[in-house]
Every structure is written in structure tokens, then in C-alpha cells.
Length: 231
Image: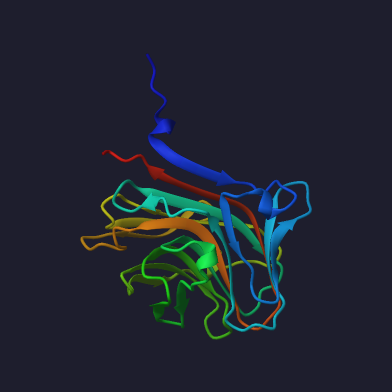
């Protein structure tokens, strides 16, 4: 008898191959005020968060529709493949948060050397802060409104306009070890003795914050998985 260990985890994958995002009830979305959040035409599915440039600090997001990735119930991991049309003033967060997209909350922000957690309470992922004074990737995590990881990453992995990048993260079941990666390359790891996030239910997704400059963010796919519960 053989055992297929791939069934030892719960998995979700969304490729956005639909005519309209309303055809995907398992997906939750939030359009930036004045912008749009919809599937774009193409041979492969893409979901676009479009910012018209007129709404500074407005939020757009796409997530799965339920908070069913319970931390400490199993390891959690996620990734998303995305593309921005121009490199300009914006914020993008790819990771887990304790709210779905339509909750209209913000995740993390950064300056050159300081990361802050915004209106969410718990989360983990990769933050791209495109502010002209920052313009960097950060590995971030937060537990109960407190930043637990805020590591600026090497500039050699920065986004390139009109070029896809794959961002992802992994959090161990003990909440004390985590890995962040870009294009399949590990860019940061923490193996410690303190909890990086709270023992809460989260959801994988992509969030974009308008900084007053028109930007199109295309998400090619969204993937999330967790280890199956032992009880």
C-alpha cells in the first residue's frame, strides 16, 4: 500500500480564469475607491487591482473568502505571482492577515528602517513599500498589534516594471519559525523562541495601497495551504 502525503495539507489555488470575479464566490475583493478590481482579458487568468491615482491611502485587495488558516493548528504557507505596470509610489503586501479583503483594513507600512503594523492585528508576509524615500521589500510579521519581524531585504530582488515576480511565506506550526521567499529564493528566515503571530485564523491575499499615483497591479494566481489539523 502506498501513501500520498500530498493529502496531508489543505490547499487552495486560484488562477482567475473566469469572465468576471463575481463568478468566483470563494474569492473576496475590495476595489480602490475610484479604481477597479476585476479579471482582465488574456490567455491566462489575471486579476487586476487598478488605482486611478486620485485616492491617497485607499486600499484594494483580493483574498480567499474565509478566515480558515488557523495558526498553531498546522503550518501555513502562501504565494502569489504578480506584476506592476510601472514602478512608482505604492504599497503592496503579499501574505496572511486576520481579515478578508472587504474588511477594508491596512496591513503594514515602512520607512527606511522602521516597520509598523496598521489596522490589522496579526499578519505575516512580504511588504513592498514603493515610497520614494523607502522603495524596498520587507519581510514582516506582527502579533496582536505588535511588529515581531521588520527586516528590509536586499535590493537585488526588487520589482521590475511589467515583469512578474512570485512572493511567498511559510509559518511553522509553533509560530516561532518562518521563511520568506521571492521567485523561489529564500530571502529571510527566523527560527526563534517567540511567537511571530497570534494563534488566530487568517487568510492569504494581496493588498495594494494607493499613494496618489496611478498603478495597475495584476495578480496571476493566489495560492494558500495549511497542514491538516491533528485534532
